[in-house]
Amino acid sequence: DADVTQTPRNRITKTGKRIMLECSQTKGHDRMYWYRQDPGLGLRLIYYSFDVKDINKGEISDGYSVSRQAQAKFSLSLESAIPNQTALYFCATSEGAANEKLFFGSGTQLSVL
Amino acid sequence: GQSLEQPSEVTAVEGAIVQINCTYQTSGFYGLSWYQQHDGGAPTFLSYNALDGLEETGRFSSFLSRSDSYGYLLLQELQMKDSASYFCANSNQAGTALIFGKGTTLSVSS
Image 1 (cartoon, one colour):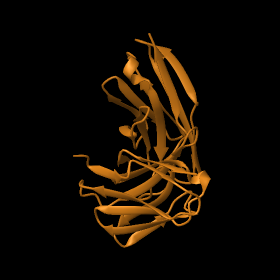
Image 2 (image 1 turned 180 degrees about the horizontal axis):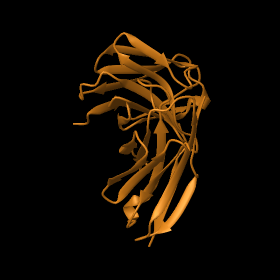
Image 3 (image 1 turned 45 degrees about the vertical axis):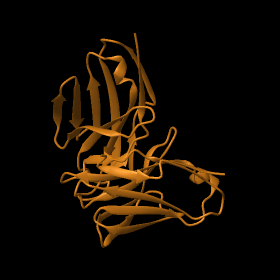
């Protein structure tokens, strides 16, 4: 089984709909992250959490919210999806003093029509 | 602010050596990481340099010069399977999240 699991793998939704992407991990890491990937733009940080009570905004948090339900679970929500949120979304956990080693899930491809 | 610059594309032939450069601008610095991502896959960790110098892991090596705000990933004895995107990443503060460069697409031909 994968150590970092994202659901769903693919999702097509319509503009204005609320959508939640889920992430769970069995690595026992406290630190979890959500990144977005667009062609040519690399990976951009949306939100991160270093424990259940800690939530931090990343580079591009506008239009997104997160919930850290437990050490193992970190979900990303789009309250009202718009087409430019069409992207590949990755959840990750980390280890290392500088959080230098990330472990990524397989990604969720989201299309907003 | 924080930014990392990498070339967008690099091409090479099997058996060759290729160097992917990364320059960064950050108000603080806590090491440089490298990741590999194959088409359709998730990024995977390759290496990390906290201090100046060369780190070697098999065919891959990574170098860091903090005084020059510069690092590189060196891939030797290239194989077709090395065709992928490579990302450098760093954090500007201890205990914060990694910020990534836009990535370098490496194409290896026979």
